[in-house]
Image 1 (cartoon, rainbow, N blue to C red):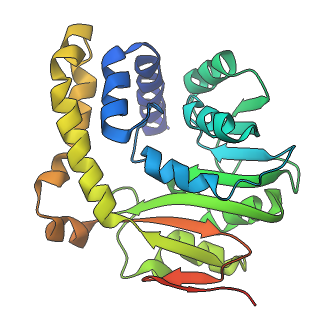
Image 2 (cartoon, rainbow, N blue to C red; image 1 turned 30 degrees about the vertical axis):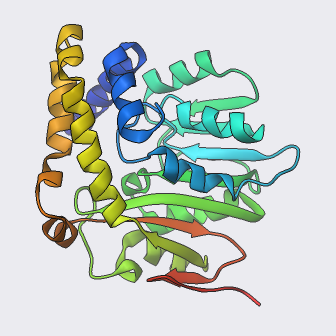
Length: 266
């Protein structure tokens, strides 16, 4: 479809820019605490949450779905020594990841719902703002369940109010319904306020580097950051009425966490 091709080109252009732009690298460090070439909301505090779920042993395998150019995976590898796997829609991003991070890694170009891996391949699977692109969320979660080793962990960042419509509560989100349909108990953290604060920080960081973006000829990407963060100019109460963001964790030690309550398996 023409719209799909336009979206793909935009994505390719983004990762070509991210590979070269010093302004964008500096922006990411200021906004997120680390440069993972973020096109979303994954600051270093969110990524550090993953670390406690990565087993402290040899031969650990991590899959990141929608891995971009692999910077986040490399960060996890440096912290844990794990073998890293990733797939992404973007050929530009995957070629960059293959070139930069060839050790103990496998990067593949692929699309959610179409790419496949052997059963019980991964100790940890991560998805930071990628589940939205599944044509059938329940079927894709079934794939994730199949790819996990027994006792493995699935860690997902998920937002409503932009790509996905905002629902009444956590249980009615598409990802929660898909997890429940697949018999996968989950823990959930509401990070809507942290996301609002991060959007404000992103806007400040973009403005601080505006002249550098312009000097590089990357005004287009500065404008994108201004558009992405415009909602942070609203009071938080208005923002929260339109947007919600969660971290979902599927882990055998926890049945469900809602509004600060966690019931663990006996």
